[in-house]
Image (tube, rainbow, N blue to C red):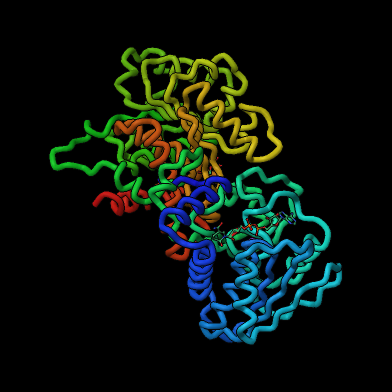
Length: 499
Ligand SMILES: NC(=O)C1=CN([C@@H]2O[C@H](COP(=O)(O)OP(=O)(O)OC[C@H]3O[C@@H](n4cnc5c(N)ncnc54)[C@H](O)[C@@H]3O)[C@@H](O)[C@H]2O)[C@@H](O)CC1
Ligand SMILES: Nc1ncnc2c1ncn2[C@@H]1O[C@H](COP(=O)(O)OP(=O)(O)O)[C@@H](O)[C@H]1O
Ligand SMILES: [K+]
């Protein structure tokens, strides 16, 4: 896991590195600027491109000045610098870099505190106005300059963070900032990049290593972690020669209704392709011929038979909800299943909507149960929130209080764990925004639970592999990814991490 630092933890890591490496602050700024420039060159290799670098008075602006000099040294000669210092408080390292820049022939314009900025001619703007030192919303001339840059329609590349954007996740709807196509961020992504409200501030982010002390950083106590490929490689268990279908568990899926049988089939197919030894699908009788035609590997269990089954615990895991409906029969059977001896459960879609209506059933969830709401389902369960920061706080609070795992789905899915940590899944892409994708995830989680993975691991693995399968298809040129196609990719993704 890669822990995500807050701004104050980043400052601690800076201080620790400066004192213990040791390295001077000006040399650290040079290193950060070098790392930025290397990434910039990989994005824009044509040295004839015109670049305007906008620098504030703090260390973010100091980076901007160093970047201007370094780009010039790398052969980018069409460079102009604007300095937006509207209150006169320049940091020491800014001043050193200002002096260094004066020794090379780059046009520097110190902007007046005005509303009338000249038109931006350059093709690219590097935004080094404000970084993680932001301590209040933008206002006055600086806000006007940010609006002027945004209105120019030029490609903006931000240094560390888009100027005006808060770093630690609590982004209000009304917050104004630079809109950057790319952000090149130092050492770690900012927590805010994972929150949906960041979409108005940036499109892509890249993280560059500036040599802060990693041993120190990884020991910092943080609330948010990002899943890495190494986590997946070490968590996934390789198959052994004498394994048999019994090794990989039996997953029972309770899903589907007359008009939503497809959801049940998608979950069952995802369970099969994720590797459960056996998959049974409990659907209404009208779905049986579809199941037998589409998925010969799966077994059917008729709804009406449920109450007569004595040994439900033969199912190693239960996945409930996709396309289920919220009628009285569904409620009755859901109650029966959640009160059964099956201990590993994932609850999705309509089963969550039933829980939102049946408070006492929700209160009784067994510890270790996984719920997988998207935003609307989450708000039905826990009430509306004014932004994603508040929603995430509720997810953490409830995961701890109820000792359950809450998979709050989005571009970056947040997995709130019973220990209060939030695990962020980085994989996935907009091609996956199509109906049925969540049904696939639910089937994958059920399958991994059936195979014996602990609930925390099953949630983490399923989210990562689900998104990764989508990413492989996107790399193959698929702009739109139908869920059935994603399912076909799951065995290959598992193979990539285990074979
Ligand atoms: N050792 C370090 O701390 C390093 C810092 N680096 C850079 O330094 C940046 C942080 O620098 P600073 O802490 O100097 O802060 P910034 O450069 O982000 O901001 C400068 C100053 O602007 C003022 N300010 C905050 N919000 C404002 C607003 N809305 N309107 C007007 N003024 C406002 C603050 O007083 C702040 O100190 C990072 O984002 C990164 O780019 C890098 O050079 C790497 C090393
Ligand atoms: N833009 C996106 N980027 C990454 N993942 C996405 C995106 N859109 C959707 N997904 C993923 O697809 C799934 C959609 O789930 P959900 O909304 O429950 O779908 P459905 O109800 O149609 O099955 C989630 O796992 C989500 O993370
Ligand atoms: K910036």
